[in-house]
Amino acid sequence: MVRISGVDLPRNKRIQIGLTSIFGIGNTSADKILTTANLSPDIRCSDLTDEQVSSLRTIIDESYQTEGDLRRVYSLNIKRLTEIGSAAGRRHRVNLPVRGQRTRTNARTRKGKVKTAVAKKKGR
Image 1 (spheres, one colour):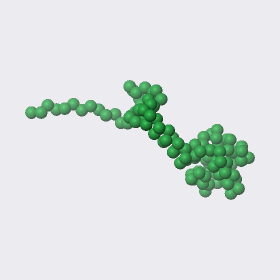
Image 2 (tube, helix red, strand yellow):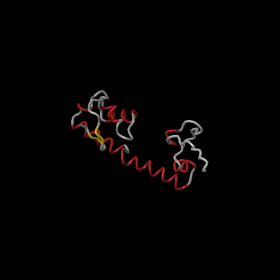
Image 3 (cartoon, helix red, strand yellow):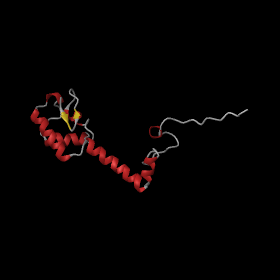
Image 4 (cartoon, one colour):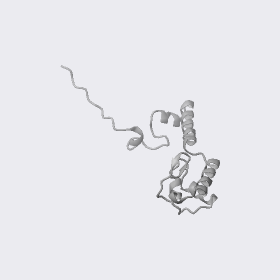
């Protein structure tokens, strides 16, 4: 089992796809990492040798922010926006779409389940 940056890479997938399971590494970054390490993207994660895994680890640790560090940067950026009271920060605070999407319809992912208004019964 290959473990890089605290993530177990899927065994049966190609290394190019397996690297994308690490938060902060996408397809382009995975390609750059593999060319730097002189590895074929078609190798399966289970077929990697220890030397290849260690070279991948060093490249990723030196060149990329991944997993916990990157998540911390994201959360600090959002926290900063909310503290300074920017438009994006206010949208984050009330759980609305931040980047100008429409909210009259759609936006259910961000707004949550539909809250229907309940009419009050007249008391006797």
